[in-house]
Image 1 (cartoon, helix red, strand yellow):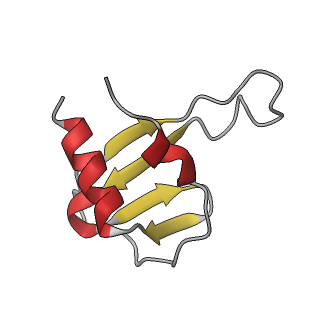
Image 2: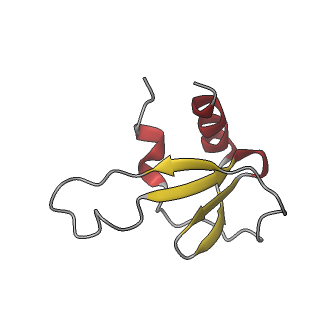
Length: 78
């Protein structure tokens, strides 16, 4: 079972990152919003490149903490 707590902060304020390298292999993170949330049909997927600590989400590319990148990489192996 994947723990969801580490993923609760994908829309936190994060430092901007440069664009991804060509042919990057992204990991898709599916965001499921609670019923009644106005944006539950929007922004359901964000993408991570743990090896570069980059998160792609609405608004651009952002650096994520190394510990979060490690969690994403580990969970993607399951």
